[in-house]
Length: 59
Image (cartoon, rainbow, N blue to C red; front, side):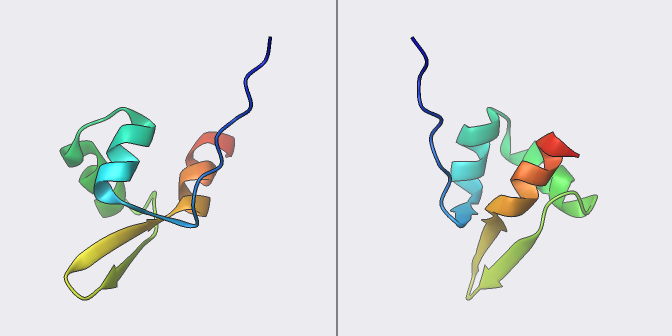
């Protein structure tokens, strides 16, 4: 039996991204620093663009 893939929201927090990728906070920041994922800063919070996460896997 197939399970339906869970859709991602348009933007994710750093914690959501860590859970989705099953990785550490440092790895998320390393991806950010390398320019592999796009982020938006709103106030003091940083959000990850879900399309850039999909791009990690499909490119």
